[in-house]
Image 1 (tube, rainbow, N blue to C red):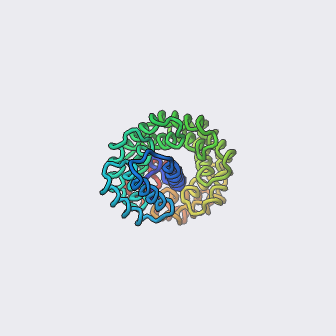
Image 2 (image 1 turned 90 degrees about the vertical axis):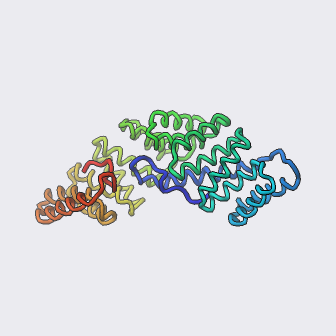
Image 3 (image 1 turned 90 degrees about the horizontal axis):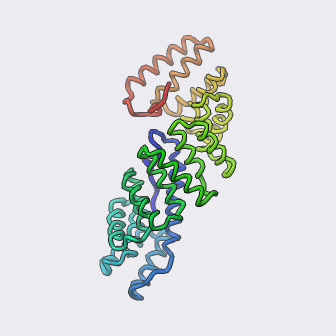
Amino acid sequence: MTSLPPQFIFPARRRVLTQARILIVTAILVCLCCLTAPAQLQSQTQAQTRRQLLQELESGQLLDAVQLGQRAVSRWPRDARLRHYLGVAYFKTGDAKQAQEQLRRARELNPKDSLTHFDLALVLLSQQDYAGAADELEAAIKLNSSNALAHVLLGRAYLNSNRSLEAIEEFKTTLKLDPAIKLGHFHLGFAYFSLGRNDEAISEYKEELRRSGESPAVVYELGHALLASGKHEGAVTYLRRGAELDARNPDVWYDLGKAQALAGQWAQAEPALRKAAELNPKEPSPHYQLARVLEKLGKTEEARRERERFAELKKAQPASAGMATGRDH
């Protein structure tokens, strides 16, 4: 399917965007591989059409796939597999509305196909319909409880619906089914962190790093959790590494500067906070922290200007917007 979904993130948090995209793309690729399974064919002509449509999907000939799929479902309107393929083709071309329509029709024609529920859930996740996606993933899991990816996506849908305890259970199930699944411990850690269970979150993030190696998002979240737990020196270590891995992320620079300030590393905190302000010029929080740091360094005039800049940006910022959402200054 197509590039997905800028909106599919944890509540009030944008920094896991890249990992969410990787997760969804992985789900799509797994789905397309599953679609190659043999099926009971109504006729040879339909069988040939299905094979051709699938080949065009797999080879990236998306416009051809849409056109072929449209002709096919017009000729065989009750063929659930053809509508499923057409829904996938629409989604990969960015037409979520038509994708939903075809996948819903495929679901009506064959409600016991777990892959149809799964793919429809992917479309709904891309539209931020987390409740609808959860319903489809629950249905997919009832039909195929061994689909680890369905469990992890259901956990993500629950987490975006503030159902953190249920999300934790889904992530645990995921790891039982596939202990090596990428980001399994990361997602579980994030769910723990959302409930303020920081020590458990830290443990899961470290386990993810041990199993999967360094990932910018995991390194950052570990540093963030350590900072929230008051473990400032440990936070500095991981956040400094996070800044090396993802130098364009303003959040990691902000947290690094804040952790350095709380650890008494005032001189090191100043450049980190200036970098955060540079990368996200409309965000007030770095200016607040920078003013405190400059005061400690005896730069009173610069500190005054930063306080004024903070006040200006804070006044202009909607209450629910920006990096400061859910952030203490």
